[in-house]
Image (cartoon, rainbow, N blue to C red):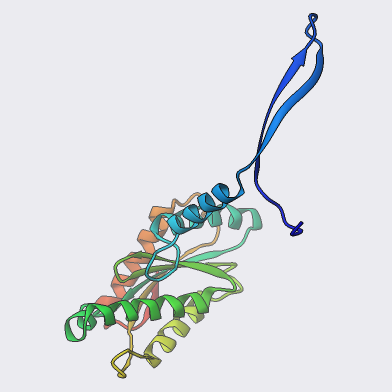
Length: 208
């Protein structure tokens, strides 16, 4: 009556004659819509980081693994960006953990807004984030990284009324034709590139 679909559970049994031929089928149909949709909501929640509302670590790794297969089918390039907030402890120590959470949310929104049309992002843990860019031969990962750095440096108005600027170091790993690369190896390479940025002054990006 609402013009929508619902979930139902159908159980049936076949009644047969003495020779085993089916005579009729009897059954029952149970409305399980509410339970099924609650289950779907729990599954969705389990895929996201509660604070930033980005994919959590397990989900983003799974999506990258799937993206490697899709890139192979398309014969396209893809990039993984490892984004680490510079001196994050400073926000917790000088302000508060609530301010630190605001910083993480700001970083998450910024990353998502940059890659949202041609990729996806997740929180890898703590102040570390992962972004994946598909069709990297068209959607330049260097340009995306620089845009993240620029937008984050513009800062945001914290609850204290102070404008807080955020610096990040970004490592970039590319797949061009080596589609047998494992997710862990790809993320590890991006992580290595990020640490090279840390060692050379932070607030920048690097390829490996």
